[in-house]
Image 1: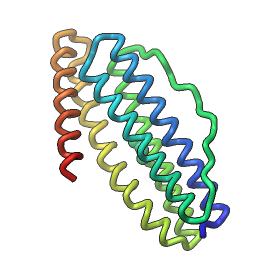
Image 2 (image 1 turned 180 degrees about the horizontal axis):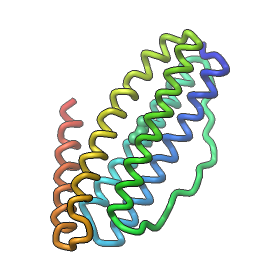
Image 3 (image 1 turned 30 degrees about the horizontal axis):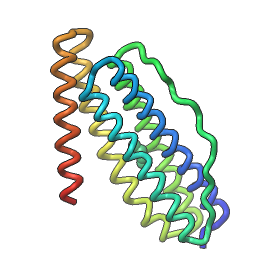
Length: 172
Ligand code: OFO
């Protein structure tokens, strides 16, 4: 059985994952309209993944005798100054999510809820990967700057990363 404090903290994370999904959906749509297919595909996939992170939490809370709350979400940013800026936002957002996961782990330890602590380890590992991927992509786009040809190649690169990670995910 979850303590009230643990239940509330997990519900806050459910909202954060849902908002993350919306943030990336907005980026996907913006990139699609700008004609950058690879980036758009990457962001659509990322948005879907965040929704799965949210669902996993909802099911966990309900299974442990709590009740998940499905709340209203903050409207995500719809326009970006540049692709570089957009990937900076993505990286910053992942750092923010990692912090909130760490906070959750802290609450689980405070509450001596070792089952939740164990459950959260999946998110801890996931955040290491997501932050690393976001940093790799950000480093690449920072090298390109405003070069149009570079951006075209970068878009194809990102598409390749997306296809490869989808194939790796399917094998797991
Ligand atoms: Fe990318 O964040 Fe979920 O956990």
